[in-house]
Image 1 (spheres, one colour):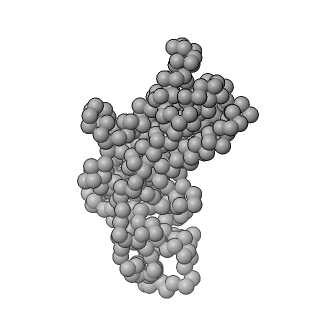
Image 2 (spheres, one colour):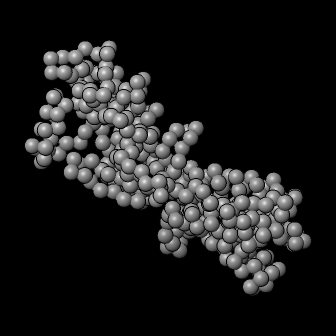
Image 3 (cartoon, one colour):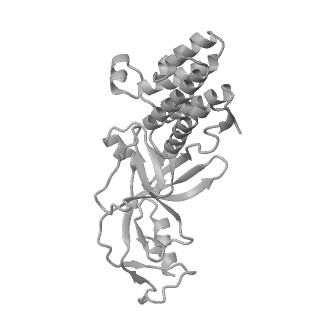
Length: 317
């Protein structure tokens, strides 16, 4: 069988360093890998790559609608880890491919040649893409992967890279925590005058946490913590709290509650404030502090949750 012959050649010549190209027929949902259709159809997700500032760090002038795809090979539901490969559009015109169909797939409108192969035209061409090489060239330290389109997407952290025997780069992605990032707020306990501002800051934080870069998440966490502490202190008749930044609010809280009165809240607020300053280039150069990482963004969000819970405004579910 032609399809079997193709596979036999690969076994006889294991030293061949072959990285298989993909041809995608978007109108029919077919995915071809070199000479054969892939069946069942693999999970293919549009991919974008974000740096710490939330800006796209890999781009392509070719096929701008979907220059990169992530092809999922496996997914662990418990650990929420996806394993797969990245492909990049080559910009080829999509000329006919000589392909062999899977025995369970029929192409009634294609003409079969004497070897049992068909000519498939109108395919979008993709080739394996090594993200490590690209980001080393761009001197990007840490990258988040956004899978999906602008209407529905998820953020993933690269946790492992390895090169397979074909030369393709095998990537393991872990989902950014999406459930339980913030506690459930009891809005009846939030000062009525501050409900709108606090809700807006928390909504923005949660939205950014699901789709933005590290620096943006830390910034939004600082804003949320500022709104919460300002509302709390003003409720306690500390008029000086109005319009102050987070560091000043932490100081006012310590003065009002005592050194140990709201210590956890004060420490959580101070952490969020200090992480925010670390995202500034001037601060990194002046004090020699390290750059922000994904774990710092998660810590900043957790600090906001701790503040809400320790003030009695929310509970972890």
